[in-house]
Each structure stands twice: as structure tokens, then as C-alpha cells.
Image (tube, rainbow, N blue to C red; front, side):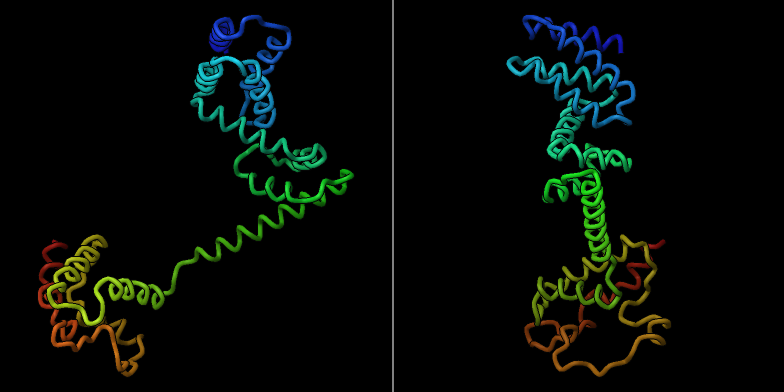
Length: 254
């Protein structure tokens, strides 16, 4: 930190015409906060914001931010982000800030920004008890949102996944598909098998497990897998893929 003090002294001399007691005090507080900035991000953001004001009419803030970032083994963007997160959290009423800190929640951390946003939408509490109630409500609301997002992120069932992939092919190639585009489908399926590293020796026949477990419904009247146009492919068996894929995949696996 001694190197940082020297760097900031030099930057201040170049960009601030006259130093004062307030600037010196802010610099001392900054050095102290930087020693353990991960545990006092709210305090560090406040001090950085205050220190930045001394460079308001000069261009000295950029080199100062670079020096501060280097001192904590980060870059100037981290310094800018700490200030931004603090200024966002500082919009909260003092009672709410105290309630958050009392629960061990740092409102100046990016991971808590949704809680801060929710609290900013609530009425200003008139007492510490109301502030604690507001914090509880905000945490519950954010928790419900996170739960809903997690539920939406659950993977598709095999059937839904298959339908979605088939629909992608139908959307791209149309029904009936022109025969001259069969090579494109063949190439795509080969690339999928190659990327998965699977040993699928005959895609035209279901595996024994699939044969035993999958139902055998009657074929629909207009099955996109069975194409009957004279200009199109008459069936999936007409694709070059199903005539040669077994040998190709064996070669790839080898």
C-alpha cells in the first residue's frame, strides 16, 4: 500500500492544484479500506465515491482508478463497478441499509442487486421493525423469482426434445423435402453422431431397449418422416445416410 500512497500523491499533485485536509483524510480511509476490501465493499464503495469527487474537474480520476485497481490486483473496471454498486445501494433508506447489514447482507454486492431493486420499489419504512419486515418480504420475493427461473430451466423430456429437434428439420427443409437436399440432412446427422462419440451402427433400426420400452402407435396420416411427393424423398430410407451411416460411424469410432 506504500506504493499506492506514493502513486496517488503524484497523481494528486498533477491534477489537483491544492490539497486539503479532507482529501488527505479520504486517502487515509481509502488505504485502510483497501486492506480488506472484500469484507467491507459497502464502505470501500463509499470512500471511493468520495475520493472520486476530488477529481471531478480534472482528468486525474482515470490514472487514480488504475492505481487503486492494481493495488488490489484488479483493474479500473472493478473500481468503477464497486462505486456503481455502492451508489445503487445507497439509494436505499438508512433504516433499510442497517437492516440488511444486520442480517449479514451486503447491499453493495452485485449478487444482491435484485433484493436492492425490490426494496427500492417498497414504501420507506418508518421504524427499524418495518425495515426488517421489508427486507424479509424482498428476500422472499427474490427467492420465489429464482425458484421459478430454476424450474423453467429443467431439461425437456426425451419426447419433447425429439419433437423440438424434428420440428427444426421440418422448418428448415419443409415437407416434402426436395431430394437434392438429402445430403444436407445426412451431413448434419453424421456430425451429431460424431460429436457425441456414440457407436450407433444402424439408425434405421431402434435399439433393443427402445423396441421393448417404446409404444408402437399407428402411423399418422401425414407423418413428416414419411414423404410421398414425387419431387421429394419417398421415405427416410431413401436418404443416403441410412444406406451408409453404419460403415461411416464404425470408421469414425475406430
